[in-house]
Length: 508
Ligand SMILES: *[C@@H]1O[C@H](CO)[C@@H](O)[C@H](O)[C@H]1NC(C)=O
Ligand SMILES: *[C@@H]1O[C@H](CO)[C@@H](O)[C@H](O)[C@H]1NC(C)=O
Image 1 (cartoon, rainbow, N blue to C red):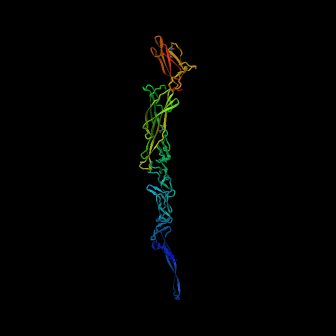
Image 2: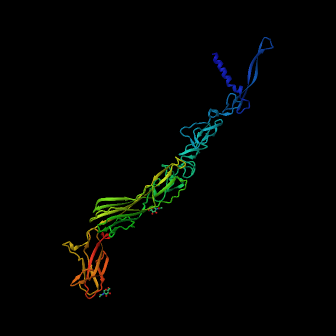
Image 3: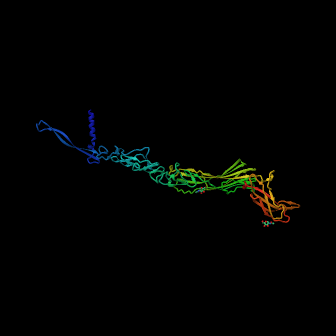
């Protein structure tokens, strides 16, 4: 029991050390408490000498304590220099809060601790950047999506100092931007795959949401080419050894119609093809700051395919592609020549010549998250379009025929001269009844001869004595009569020969 009492006494002494050792009257935030105490004393009274009298003495007392909310540094402090914020002073991290999941990411490093100083009771000041004073604490500024480092002075007025992916505060150098409104980090067109590189295109206000692809480009990243290249020349030519017989399409035919070219000649010995295609890329007006480091689109493939059919039955094909072309080497324009092996053609064979050209290309994008010197790049490819054009070559090795060869049908005479014998130099003749099963009739031709006389025989044609007096190699297929004038001599006798031709445009 005695020890406990002793201990209590010691504590009491200790609690008054301020007064004993440190606090000075008039010190900072030192409050002085004063009072008088009556103390009872006894002494011998003068009366009766033997008596004792009780006397009351008034004693002045005071104590020094810190003002409420203030504290001393230690027991020897003379002043109460330390304000108390929620029970703590600057000596034991008043104001400070350590954050772990959300924190400030600054260019100089991450800041997890709010810092701050308790400058007066329950008032924190000098919070670290990114933290605001909230009475006895410094607290982390409110969040902003995609913001690394935000600052504020209250719990709600935060703005962003550094957005995620902002390598430098310049156009083309930030994945998120705050330059329009610094309370937000808005997704910018960038090198990131979750954004849009928007090339070729324009980013209105730098924003991914404002990406407008260049004409004829579409897709999130403008990676689709929507128009085809043009085939400017497509020529397929079949020739025989001496080059006397040639079968070819119109090389400048630029519509996509399937056109048919007829032939009645079988012995072609070579097939040559020439194709040119063109695709011009849109204006490339990047500057050196752009994350797109290289861009090229154009023609990336030219191809010719010959498909061989017997009637409607597919037999085989040959395909040739232009060498040296690929998606890494787009070109504006390219001429390609190919030669093909020929087939042994028979009646009703067909060759479909297919010309195609594809556009495409690439864009090389600097990954600025990975390197701010643009040393890390990635190549993306455009998805292009193919233009295909077809021509058909058709073998009709059977001659046109006249209805008179089919027995039992009534039939227009193949040629009919109105007056067999006449002195009128104006001759008229009519015809009809001609057909051609596959190709159809294209046009009529006639030759009109004077008959020659060989001894006692009349000779037809331009042989001995006979001579050509009138000819037309291109009578339209819609005609069925001709009136023509021939010179008449005394002994003139004329005959005419009508030939029909089958060819392409009469496939009626
Ligand atoms: C877009 O494609 C069309 C069709 O090919 C073409 O006429 C037009 O010129 C193209 N626009 C641009 C800007 O190249
Ligand atoms: C032949 O035809 C021409 C022109 O139609 C005409 O001028 C001429 O008189 C005709 N000749 C004869 C002999 O009828």
